[in-house]
Length: 420
Image (cartoon, rainbow, N blue to C red; front, side, top):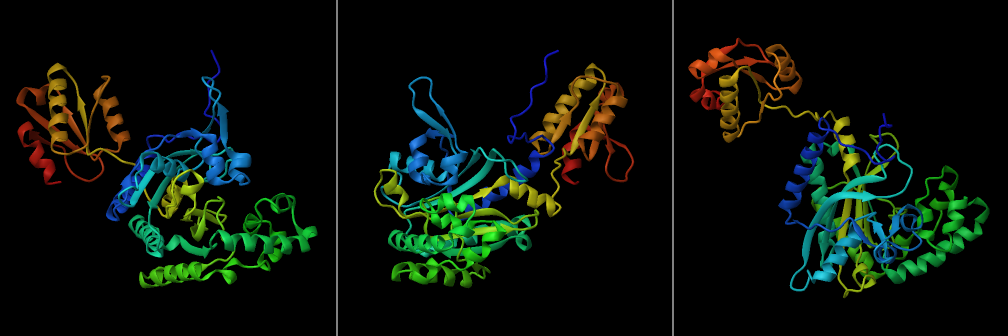
């Protein structure tokens, strides 16, 4: 026999017993986004590689090390599996002129791909919700997205497990001046930098502030803070955001070292963080990216957005005791030609009434079918043999609660279960 094939490392299956928890999370998220006027947009998972190089930044970890890039055999074009969704959404907005007559609130979801070492809640194929507000300039939309996430945490029963950090990384001119100050600071302490920090020193020094190396915490803590040098407009934007969050009752901490990992951000950046999964981890993060449209060939358009990792949210829900199993109301056990016909009619009639019903398939003895009924998690087994079929009745047997088996006429089944 041939060797059984396995999934690619870091690209995981979501099995039927796990999928209901994903569906619950996704349904809840879509409902919350809908309440704020965000509409669905769907973009390809494969884009031209220059989109991500120009949008994310040539010297980011994502572009340098983590992208799945390949050559199209048809025309030699360099293509990349999307490592994030914002660049693709902005490309689609420019291509289809979506903000011509009004700003847009949109969301998408689906798989993203990064070639990095798999770890708990972080995989090579992972799934995200990505939410973008396109054409909005003020801090009110930044605050709206943060408040919207707080509403989602409440809806999922996770408010106690996630905290908010915010920062402002200013505008382009402020970041350029801060970049020079950072380089000068780190060069004065070059002997204390690890190899990764030295590599980033002249390409992306802002990312050094995000280092998790314990030996570098003192030097990063003493680095110049961009918050101290914000211009008038950036300061007013950040102050406005803080006031709106305070008005909404959203607790937050200002983290001057919070920078995010992609180059397109400006002004507001934020992260919702949890330590309930072991090491501190970000479950949702984003911010403002007012220059990205121009970088990708469009006209100047202010924008703000965030991404949320679904795998980590599922882990959080499991940690909070959420149950993933989704069981039918009833499992129909049947034996005999006439009984099979009545079983099919029973299943369809109850489904018409809105109930979830499994009709046994593939035959089997009553005993084996009852084992399947129990394994399905159904509340009731509906038993139909030749005797029941002869009189047009169905026997109802409780599987998860006390109660005696009883016979009910077929035409009274809908009413019987409506009262359950």
